[in-house]
Length: 615
Ligand SMILES: [Zn+2]
Ligand SMILES: [Zn+2]
Ligand SMILES: [Zn+2]
Ligand SMILES: [Zn+2]
Ligand SMILES: [Zn+2]
Image (cartoon, rainbow, N blue to C red):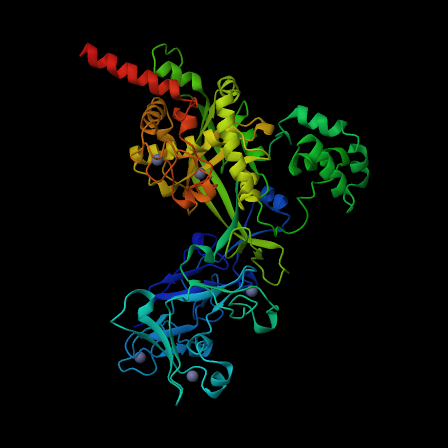
């Protein structure tokens, strides 16, 4: 019986993008680099804004195809190859190194020794290194690793191995790899296999030819092929905002400081030469301006297009794409095109004088509903072992100037805070002190560079506030509307230097049909105000309290405060920061810090008691 394995086009960036290892129907594969993509049938994905920011020529999606490319040479579709290549038979326990010549189209790998032939299973362990390489574990070496070099040389067979399982022991101790070469009998169990064992790195990824391998001296780590540190994709996402006369920068005062800097004229004179970066760095250090602002000002001054942060994106930092999006959402007349249709709405609380509604109305600003939005998600590379390890680009040969991408369509709710209320709250010394503590943890985190590309150069209270609000709102919306939390996503607009103070909660499904308007309906009055109120009430309590509320550092690198799985965390795909920089206390108060929405919690309790007394 022939089987069909299929990866949907929308999955070719995430979760099954270049370098990812994944299981389908008991078989395991790795997604190959874009150098192996078919030359024909790729679908061009337009996103000039993202392309210019990333310094690439454009984007392509894998050809949509009903065929898979797992075992059919030259078939269309994104290429995946079998990995690990070491397989074993669950019946006779023989291990087999599977080669491309062994593949039979439409068939899973079968045991050559058993009758009837059993399907072979992939070995559970693989090896990775800090430079992003991935390879099979050298199982022959492992089986003989307790022998000395002399004894090892006695064994003439490299591939006569069995993967044994003992019924007497449990866990990894029960598993062992044994050599069945004549007169050898070497074996070792897998008890302490995870970790570093002085094995050599292959210096490449499985889709790269042996000639492309580099001399790699990094220690290799043996991990399960499903381990979280096997693959950290570097993705970028841009909303398809229409070309408008959006100002290139939002903060005029900051722009003026840059232009008045004593090195500004020198920078303009040498723009485009290697010396420019020296001046640019000094100006940015003195003024606090970021790359994109200085580049926008330079482009304006010199009449040349921004240099897009130099060349192909190889770092793990993401360029800031928030400025134009924020400008579009806050424009006096929000734009409406075929792929990006906005309309202004309200919470429906104008003229409301009774609390908690009046308080709620005061705390929030603008509501904009996106009836349709288009998002382009691109993959520039990945790391292994840790997020700040060496980046492997999607084209391992570093020749191609395009990136793999997908486009998705959806809808969203954009919401801002009341700027005056926010400014007053951010000025509170307890608020500042609490966020100073988080900033200190962020400075120590190896995720700092990546997170700063979202928070801006300095973590502000509004970022943690808005980010936590986005999580709470997604959880509440999912509770009330039937959307799963995993189908909703956030975008945080909270850079103080760009005068941002809003969030977008959106859903984007795979295809051009978009979604059905259900999320936007949740954003219409009076529903959104009711949702926000219930969200605030719910956020005041977590089932892990008082532990959660009093936490001084939980989650990844201790970057969260009062925020845990029970109250504020989201599925990985929904969150821009990897579930970090969250704190309910900044929303609802507690821990000696005034929450931005604390008065609503209080007012709604008073109102509830009032209603009880009247009853
Ligand atoms: Zn067998
Ligand atoms: Zn042997
Ligand atoms: Zn390596
Ligand atoms: Zn909690
Ligand atoms: Zn998040």
